[in-house]
Length: 125
Image (cartoon, rainbow, N blue to C red; front, side, top):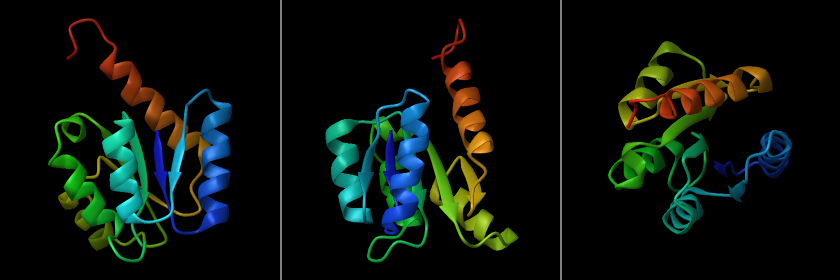
């Protein structure tokens, strides 16, 4: 799993939470690093802060969707902005889900688990 957030404490806390659930996690501090890690790691799940400096999360999601791995990746947006327009921009950029910070860990982990169950159903791709 890839987590990208320029706020160190937020990224590290989220990484610790998902790691405790059994996920292997790598953390990026900006969009460029997120793309580099995604290219090397080829994660099934990417959790991206939208408001990163440089390449923001929307641009990272868009670029990930252009890759072979990114087509089937679960890409989750984390943002401090929860307006309808923000959600629409995130979905248009390629995100599957949009969570407003502070995110409820159970909701985020539940979404990831539901996505994984869907991937591993008999007859699913």
